Length: 158
Length: 158
DNA sequence: CCAATTAATATTGTGCACAATCTAATTGTC
DNA sequence: GACAATTAGATTGTGCACAATATTAATTGG
Image (cartoon, rainbow over all chains, first blue to last red; front, side):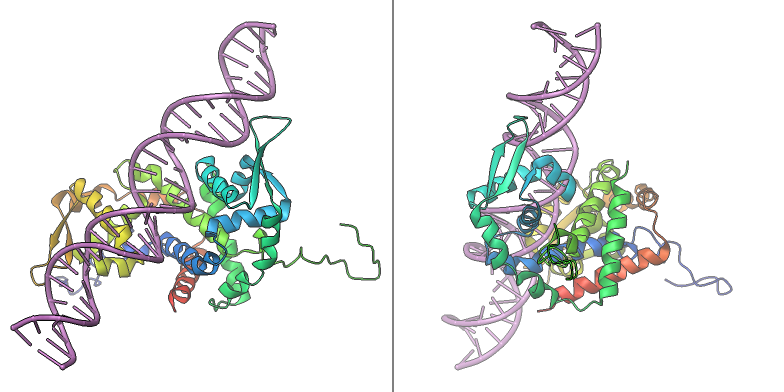
């Protein structure tokens, strides 16, 4: 664009600092990076017939032995529309069982099978395999995690 | 857990620093934050009958007037399996046209309709509406963007 | 010049995400 | 104790993401 006012600063009307310009988006790199993460995990997890989210759910179960759908959803920021079919798939793979709570028939208690528990040992090398593709300092990783959590918590409010 | 060896440091075998523990995942907060972003944009964009990704694609077109699917995919880190149906939806909404290149019949040139161009003006307040839900400093936002881009570029290699 | 190869999209199938809605069980409240 | 309100999940439908594959057009090597 030609600057027709030579005495004025060379600034066009909407190009620099246009909030509707892709370069000025903070969230899109975040979005792309999150996609890249699941893409990078995919071949590592395919070996164990798991998707990234299934792997995350298994991690929760490895820590707690038993969770209901509501608690799981709160912890992972996901709803039953996502979790119900996912948990059915994990059940179909015989990694978890989905039983109803005795005290409240509405709640589904998810727990590990023996195969599900055993999988943790087999997958011990997965985090390191991903980590070796990432060359960020410990400080950078910590900061990325902190900022992601901060953004998440702010966007989760009203 | 009870420490049965009072002279030993209080450390359990696999709980602290277990790389298969959810708390120790860097990428999961990133994943959750990216979901939170599209969730936060949803009501703002619903007013314009756009999804988050459709909005991003429109942003590319507002800058360039004309792109083919390959270039768009490289820029957004997405493939034709994602973009083809999305672009058909934008075409159905009469925001873009998808014509074949004259010089190479394989390539699809995407360009804006008048309505598509006009939409930019109408959406001028969207970025600010999202931004006011986020209380991060400029430095933090810049750092989040930088780290996301760094992670993305490293995971996109080999 | 034409068969083989390569390149650009499109298609198909699976698995998230999530809004909206539905069902069934539980918990008030009178 | 009946019944309205609430709660936990399940279901349905839309739109990404992406691997795998198919289709069609261009390019190239002999």
